[in-house]
Image (cartoon, rainbow, N blue to C red; front, side):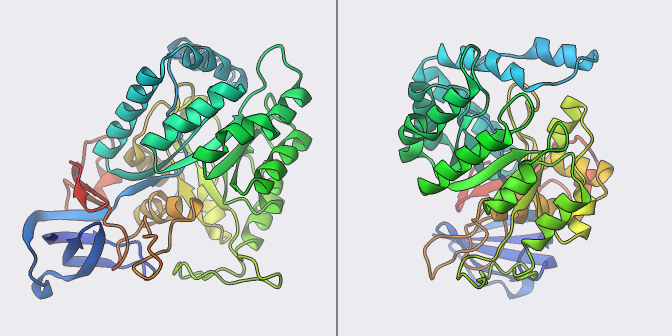
Length: 412
């Protein structure tokens, strides 16, 4: 079954050439994009959809969420808005509620959050464990996450539970807990931050996770300067997320990791002298979280200018960023972080895919790329109720999602 989407006023591909096509059309065949180009040259298809002069983008790729939770932290939010400083300790409130919620209800809650995200244009998303914090509960969270999200990350090293020695808990997170979650996850993460895990403890978690064959991510440099970025670069993590407090050396280290990468963004994986992937670590900015915690916004403009690819993600979670609106993140990046509309959209689509290492793949290898609109890539499309993507920032807060295709299926 093929579908022709025509009468597209602006098609922002976010492909290797960064093309923005006017009066364009797209053909979807099954779950893949089979053709893009001028509407006047579009081939015939089994079905046709008139976009009505609207803009079409890749679907949002949300590379950082925490959707497997129960409970409410409104009181914490109110206290923070009244001037109380954010600390990592609030996670324990969610842990207690999550542990006391049935599998059925926890799954239903997560499915509802995914549906909310899709309704706003998100077509590919990652989510983490981290609100179980014992072997049984972390394995349960990983299993449930694997049924609702595209990518799952093990975050047993989210917080040390009260009454447990930090080194003892780190050993648990590196051993039995990791082993229990391993069948359901592709990634591992660690909250390397004051009030969470030290540099030494974070290093142990990253090493154990790499030895287990998992890709790596790091929560780093959120509440102050620290070792998160340097550890992420040292271990070749796919992303380091938050990055609110960066030194010039942190930025230089991140930039150096991309020196061998194809800057055109084709997804070509050059190799270094050891024959390994030469890509660096993506810096993931979480602007909704920054606003909620009243931290300085991550320096997205400075990172891009230094040659560091960035991603934008929602960080949807109950304590510090209870939103899955990627459009809000894009708007904030344009209005307050100094990004252009094109840069912000790219960070929320291709950048998220790069942070998840899903930016390449096509008919030849059977693993379809997400985050960009190109022949052979997964047909993830976001149709705006506007003639251009500029309206995302020009009309902040307005519900601009008109239609969504996810893996070739119309989801809205």
